[in-house]
Length: 75
Image (tube, rainbow, N blue to C red; front, side, top):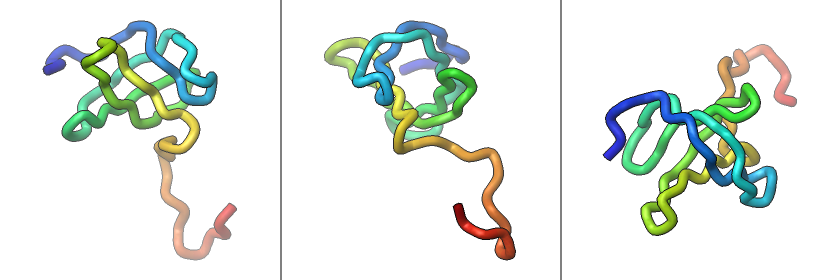
């Protein structure tokens, strides 16, 4: 559906209770799964065709740049 990235537009932000804010879709990860960036945080997003908007989950679907190694403590 979307072939040209990045996409910069108003999107619903989960941590702001769905308020519309500027965010960026960087690339497609899978079926209706997109890599988004909001306030410097990379996270997952989905597209809702009924309202023609992306929903960015910067609360529970944050993507970490580095996985902890085996000897590092979990925090």
